[in-house]
Image (cartoon, rainbow, N blue to C red; front, side, top):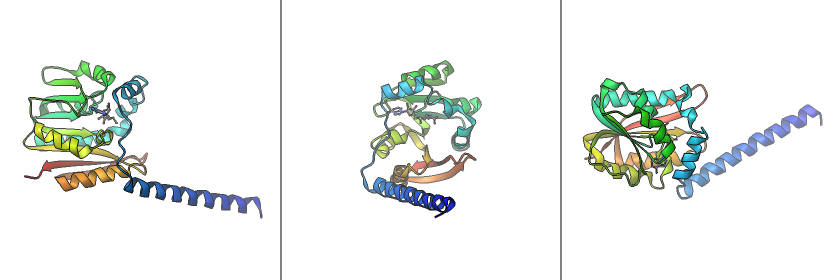
Length: 221
Ligand SMILES: C[S@@+](CC[C@H](N)C(=O)[O-])C[C@H]1O[C@@H](n2cnc3c(N)ncnc32)[C@H](O)[C@@H]1O
């Protein structure tokens, strides 16, 4: 057999093997128990210190932030916003200052909150706290889970917990990445869809083939 012929056969074998592996991975992730992303305070702190999350401020991530900002301003202009897993406060930076009355960001990483802290003022506060145990006397018009539900063993229970901090007619905004290895995110959406009403939904993709789904959810009364 010629060199070109065996190269073609090798390529076909490799593509077929990749397809089988990704199909098996998808199948397993559908039937195995939900696995949350690796997190934990120390690991996340180390990642922030090492600059691993710095890319979140890049233009490649801007589209999902822009959709969330648009939804906050459209549905609850002048409202009070709580962001869970706020990182270094990029969402707050992208909000129009005249279009919200209060912003509270919660993140488990001390380093992320340290970076966000210089943005604090009488309307803006950042708190280092585990979202599973965070408490608040305040209620909010919008509660945002921006690329963070994946970290929790029971993401729907977490969202349900935050119903206690939602004003009457308040809304949740959830953003989650879509990719080959994020089949579990589909399961999170499925569970959320059965608990909440979807008021709006957007799928954004960049030319680097990054895709996110962002939904506005209301509590079924
Ligand atoms: C992928 S980053 C997203 C950061 C930011 N929301 C954004 O969209 O750029 C996930 C964030 O969730 C935070 N996080 C993970 N587990 C958490 C927990 N148990 N409580 C609060 N924040 C948590 C991480 O520290 C990290 O900042």
